[in-house]
Image 1 (cartoon, rainbow, N blue to C red):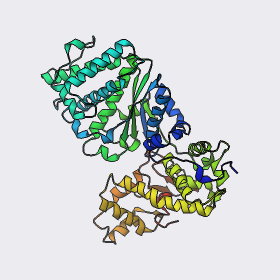
Image 2 (tube, helix red, strand yellow):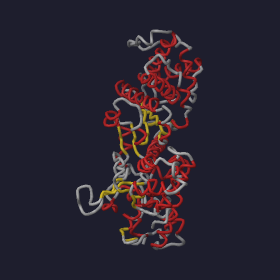
Image 3 (cartoon, helix red, strand yellow):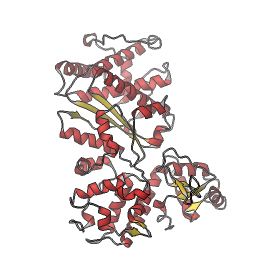
Length: 489
């Protein structure tokens, strides 16, 4: 038995990295599992684009950077993240004149916004050289005179109505004004501002490295309403600025955290090349047969050891070897989408059902799984579907899954149920429903005989293979995490 014999004493954390940073920073400081050395690569390589599905730990990277910076303020700076989903994105319209090509227009708008944030973040850096401190102070003064407010994208329009003071000077390199920018005064002034801010940030020198983290790209609705082009401009602007900082030797880096399937929806030239050259993929899925040594199990054990250093394996010390005829770890992971959030929240919910110290009975584990399925997993499905459907449609989808009463089914089964029930007929687009459920890993495809003709069936869930697409003519399966919620287990 473990020295800490009460499973309830372990702290598995919060479902939100921001809350964990505020309320349990030790978990991010000492209980952080750096999958693939992601944080080290963010700090020390050219890679900047964090990609992963919801719950994969993207925001935790940003929170981890903040804690590292707090522990080494002379070497690192990492201010609070910039949350795109909290920005009034409509205010970016009109920042750059519509006469400019749309792709270029959005890139310029984001470059201006990001450089304003960076100038603000560089202020007060005592590790910077005197020349850099002077230039940053002058730039802040210029932004103030122009009426530009960091938190208000709409204020960026004032760049078109004001000029950079001649006293601050401009970079010696040619401005490279395009014909478009030379057509009118406001376009020319805007380009001068871009050149000026690029000069201040690229020529910045400090013994402290500055990391600016962009978060909030986890909601698929952000890529709707024509914003695919705007958000694609954000990625392209970050590529350009980071390359400029790296080439010039400026100790500044912008890190972007983006949901994998949202990234695939962006209007972004060379999206694949950017992903290959700059992407860091947070994919925790591993073969269930190796569940006992998986990254997720190691993460759970790492957090357990913060409470009990002698706890070598949380699962063997507190759980029976098998549950419902399956290896316990494999069975628990089966209830998840193989993300840190899913597994840690499952363990946290099981804790609520433990009524004393010592080993946890399988019946207690099953009660916890039932609770997890009916609350956490259903809530996750609700959040995912809210991107695509109205509240009424979401309710009908849940009813449809509940009345189907099958773990495994076909598209024809669903269609028959919809056609024979007035609650669903002419009220749900089944292709849209199944695609949304598949893209969020709440249903998957099942290939009888396996992908290569083996005896075991092969399951295609999005969390297992991010490139998988739904086949409507192949059998489907409801994710095991939902079985208890729909009384299928």
